[in-house]
Image (cartoon, rainbow, N blue to C red; front, top):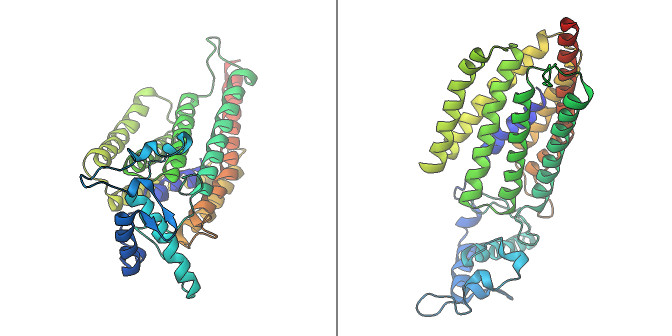
Length: 342
């Protein structure tokens, strides 16, 4: 319930990540002239693109652009404009570096180096590692409940929050999957899927924190707690996807949910006698320190590693710690309930 500071504000800052506002780089006249020239000639210095060559009727001379690359590269769907922007950005940054200038953002993003068409390869790799850690944590939780701990006569677990944690695990894995996809190729569709999955995870994490901290076991009471929050986050997700992808509003919603969620776990950690509460505190503190990286927006080192990628790295051990607490909680509650049943 603390590792959530990681996943919680992971979404909070993840949900709000990268508004595509005008930046210093794309306002640079040299950069803009390069992009315009590239779209006409199909070349940036010695680098040329077949899908930038058009006939008088506006059609690509060599056929559809996605048929001009090897199959394993076609998925990235780079078009003429995006390729021109990318290579003009690299060209301009080379010139700026020779003049002793620091990197600047282009279209709201730092200048990252692609690898096989992947925009942010380090962030993608770390998202994949987080996904694998979430799967490992969820699987170990499943094995503990159904193969190591005692079960009720109807073969169900004694632990009252089993179903909720299964949903949490699925939402977490879904969120990290779309994180990897989004960092691979940032387009409107992947951005919406990424933000939507993050909001869903944050909203459900808030619901789960309230239910566990206040030990809500009655199904009717759970519905009363969850229904308004589910309605709110569903409305917000629909708003982002079908009305307006408002980054500012999304940031506010995520931060509010994240702060409330964190406060619930922090207060519960302070009053509970749970035997593994130290893990809860460690995850809260660790998550808080990790989130400082999100406030340090610096250019990517060697074009690959920025603050956001480092934050992804810190969530890996926090994920392990968090699922360890969840397993401890399941053992603690199962032991107590099993003794009462005897």
